[in-house]
Image (tube, rainbow over all chains, first blue to last red; front, top):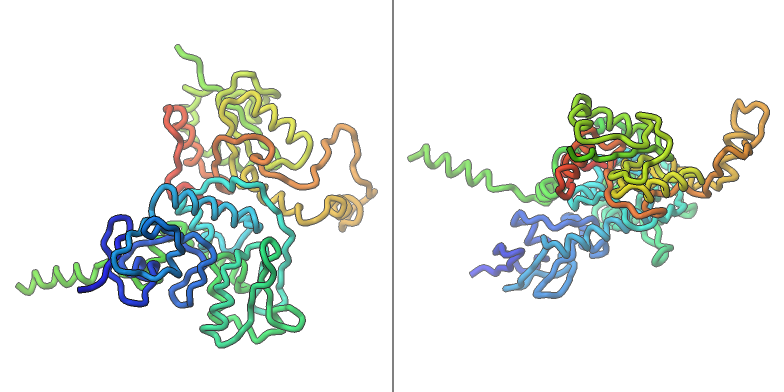
Length: 252
Length: 180
């Protein structure tokens, strides 16, 4: 007898060791997230994936699935929380989409679209943040960093390097580069690293790629992030099953 | 016959791109003016809002003292105030100057910049004073609705205004929401 949880009333099987996020993704249920990526250990910091588990709020990317849990995710209250969190991310950094090469491919923006976020609600910080364009192939624009640590994890866990870290606390939190000069050019970072392509925003960008794909033809211009995210995490809508069923009809 | 809905529009620290996009509703403008009358707007050169405007559409953020006065005039005279476009919502590209001290901005533009002749910082009393930072509208007055986009497409204006005129709560479907 396989173990199950329910998410928004839908019964979902899981395997021992899976988080609620893992189980949800495998079953085709999208839970909004920014710091989670299926290839890396969870971090649980962006809080967008917060769900109600038996009445308590938990990060679904870190909380283990357990038999019989009642999980609520796509509720008005949780989506309102998610929208406010996304708005805080927008006002804390400098996210000026019209001038950003990541626009249309940006997960922060796509989550905003998904949540129908039309304004930023809070006063803007206009924080003074630096750019590091020292590396020949990749640039860091700290204005757009949301401290998800995906580059930190990708560099350590996939690239076998240790290029990035988060330093400071609270409002002083910032991304740092592990070199004497603090510059990306003085690390062993390469454009082929997983960490060079993992950033959900436009904080880490490959150089000389600008407008290779025109605005209007980018990932989230026509597809919502829920479909894209589920496809990336390996979920396939049951098309093979449908195809097999159709095939078996012919066989008969 | 009931009186028409009064719509006022203006561009503060904007580029008039949102107004151009609004005009892109093309022949739908003829349908719109059957039920709407334009009040203060660059479209008709009316200089001040009447006291009974229904909808105020504001493009651009707030970068100088005149912007503040105009914005307050709109808030005072419009029942519904709408922040139109990226600059009105988050300051937009004009807000890029927020990362450079104002004195340095002025020096670069009027004193030290390449090709500047007769260098002097403009100080005519008729010129509105610059604010230290460019600000989005909602930090100065209460805003009722937001139309994101750089610019919002003509369909965004059309959907929003037709919703509002029909008396329903305006909403933008996924394909009409863009920040770029």
